[in-house]
Amino acid sequence: MWGERYDFLVIGSGLAGLFTSLTLKDRGRVALITKGALEDSNSYFAQGGMAAAVGQGDSPDLHRRDTLAAGAGLCDEPAVDLLVKEGPQRIRDLVALGVEFDRWGGQVHLAREAAHSINRILHVDGDATGRGVCTRLIEEVKQSREIDVYEGHFVVDLIMTEGRCWGALALRNEEYRAFWAPATILATGGVGQVFAETSNPPTATGDGIALAYRAGAMLMDMEFVQFHPTVLYTGGDKSRFLISETVRGEGAVLRNQGGQAFMGKYHPLGDLAPRDVVARAIWTEMQQDARPHVYLDATSIKHPQDRFPTIYRRCSEMGLKMERDWLPVGPAAHYTMGGVYTDHHGRTTIPGLLACGEVACTGIHGANRLASNSLLEAIVFGQRAALAAEKAASGKMPAPRIPSLSAMANRRALQRISWHYVGLERSKELLTSALMKLEELGREEYRGTDGASLEAANMAVVIGLMAKAALLREESRGAHYRLDFPDSDPSWCKHIILQRGEDLAFRPVDKG
Ligand SMILES: Cc1cc2nc3c(=O)[nH]c(=O)nc-3n(C[C@H](O)[C@H](O)[C@H](O)COP(=O)(O)OP(=O)(O)OC[C@H]3O[C@@H](n4cnc5c(N)ncnc54)[C@H](O)[C@@H]3O)c2cc1C
Image (cartoon, rainbow, N blue to C red; front, side):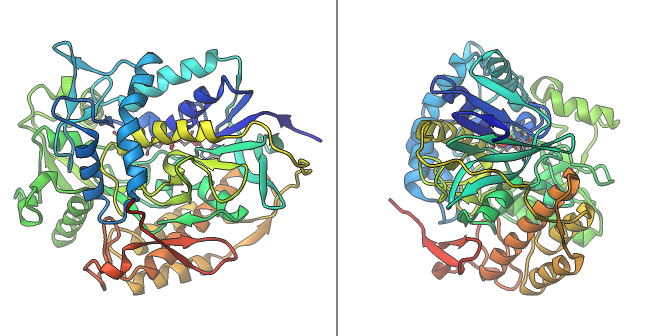
């Protein structure tokens, strides 16, 4: 049998994959596969920080309440309990691994973000939290003898037999390579790149969701995508630089083309309203003014270069001084609440396949994620998945076959379909058009080795699933907004389940 054999196979080197690998290393041999360099992940670009109830006056219960409020009735409460209760211990684990959270006056500094009722965001190097945390964990992974790292390996398919997963098939330099393991952990992150406007780096193409779906795993909440209100508008079609919410937390104000601070019109919390409200308000103002952006006025923030060094530097590169200029900003796809359904131990509905981090859907985010809960999710549920992964399993490992996939080359066309038809505002007409346009793009059976085509094929699968679920959900809730059904409907307080070859199904929200 060709290929490599391991006890555990971890796919993805974001925070979820790194933390899971480090948790697994004392339990067996680990292969950590990632399609770019170890640093290529959403996690590495995370700015604001990690939410955890570690400060004075805070408690898991308060964190829980804020998480549930953001989730708009769709959070699975026992999963949220695990997140908020185990979060502080996992933060201590990171500190034990050598992560240095920012301290002011001898105390860990806790920042504020939208929809948090208290300051609870831990951060590293001001606004470079992801880079700070990942760099330390990457050093640790590289030093570990039990973890073999495979960079530049694009996983194209799961190895399945009789409904069980036995590893994955990866493509490197146009050659296929099999990785065998009784436990495979998907940590492949989100889908931001399927949209024309996104804060996500190029790796976030939803591969893990497409792989799991093809293999028959259950998916949940695919209609819920969070749009971040403020990415720096720079024109062109590259991924956008994020202006963290903590900038508004520190007093920055959104203004329209006329210079009016408009958020007070839309929500009592003004500029610190929930993300979906702010993103849609900006979208409305952009359409009214027929401009591709609004402005973020951060001129009131003292010493922005110290508090937001990364953002400050990027703005300066564009000739913008935060203390002087208003920054052109607009919304962009940012975070995927839905994904591969897992239980509280990261187990998917496929034996041998686990998932954690943004690719997974544990139900903790409901219809909308509370800011800075996702890095925390990556470590809380990454650890849980690692502990549940079985080193040994009985059964005969199958021989791998080169998969026959539907490939599609036109990435940009796909991104435009999502942005215009499955974006911030949806309707029956728009979503039906999305599905028709996907069909028109056409697909062909493909057995080649062109990674870009295979990636685009995954994107097409993900867009189709999002559009299907969004069309079905005839209400507005959290990040999902239907122009033709602008209100929430209590009868829709349930999860939509999608599974290949199965009828559409619903799952009740777990209220504990
Ligand atoms: C700009 C930005 C700022 C953010 N700021 C914050 C913040 O302040 N706080 C917060 O909590 N969250 C933040 N988020 C969200 C957060 O970063 C992500 O939700 C989280 O990092 C996801 O971690 P992950 O490990 O699940 O996935 P990722 O970090 O995205 O990692 C996925 C990994 O899988 C690999 N991969 C994907 N497909 C394949 C494949 N087919 N084969 C092999 N490898 C593959 C990728 O290359 C990557 O290494 C931010 C996101 C962005 C984009």
